[in-house]
Image 1 (cartoon, helix red, strand yellow):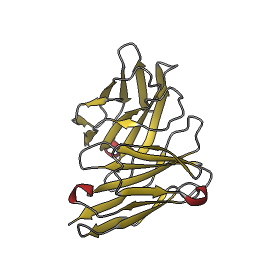
Image 2 (cartoon, one colour):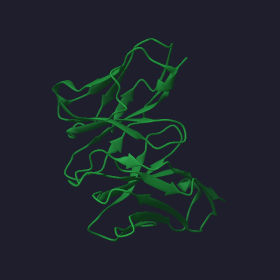
Image 3 (cartoon, helix red, strand yellow):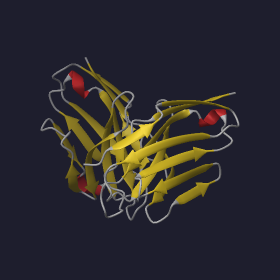
Image 4 (tube, one colour):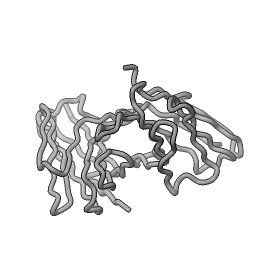
Length: 113
Length: 115
């Protein structure tokens, strides 16, 4: 069990550029979640996958955001036409389901300049 | 939707003393309440959780209590140590399934344990 892995750890991008983050969950976990965390706040739910199916999406996930989980393994989160308000820590978590708690990754810190 | 409020936002205690962090939630359908510890530069780490069918759960120096009638739950850390210093988040699951899907988090408590 190597934990939840996120890449990159840090990303600085210019406003208007597209960025993509990757999350590798714990291998036996079929549930995967993306959260966003801004400074001094708790994580906010963005979206949830069970295997390859995206089952829930938050209103926070505007049409500039898209997430995928092909083959039910790793997941990617893409932000198009980034804005300064997108600057945050993007956290990925996975769980086995059945009432098991999440395991979070260390996050990708995005800074939009 | 669910709303979780957490207090205090900062807490300083002397090493060896106890620390208590309190949360309230709004959705009576919530039935899963985890607590996470987040250290600088790391993701939140689950430290303890409780489900609505029990009122208290303990794991060594950490305990959580739940009052469903009042819709509040608390984290208790006894015999605090400097390595307990971190930001602590409470959360609630607003779904009735108890499957720990979407969580609503509190705004966090910065705990500092003074040596």
